[in-house]
Length: 87
Image 1 (tube, rainbow, N blue to C red):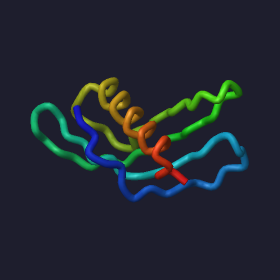
Image 2: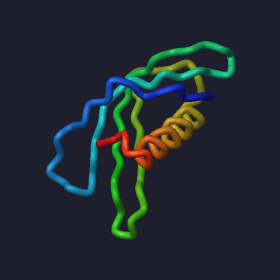
Image 3: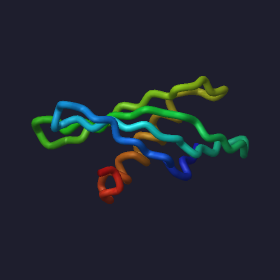
C-alpha cells in the first residue's frame, strides 16, 4: 500500500483553532499494482499535550481492506503537516 500524493486540498473553515479539516484526493497504489484516486476527508487536531491526532474518512468505497489504507494515509498526512504543506 503506497500513497503517492494527496491532491486538490481544500481547507474547511472551522471555528476551533486547534482543529483543521480538509478535503482532497488521495492518489493510492495497491499491492496489486492498481492505482486509484480516492476522495477523502481528514482532520488534524492538536491535543493539549501538543500531539497531533489525525482522523481520515474515505468518501467512496474501495475494494481493499480499509485498515492499511487509513494507516498509510495518516502517515502521509503527518508528513505533509510536519513539512508545512497543510496551511
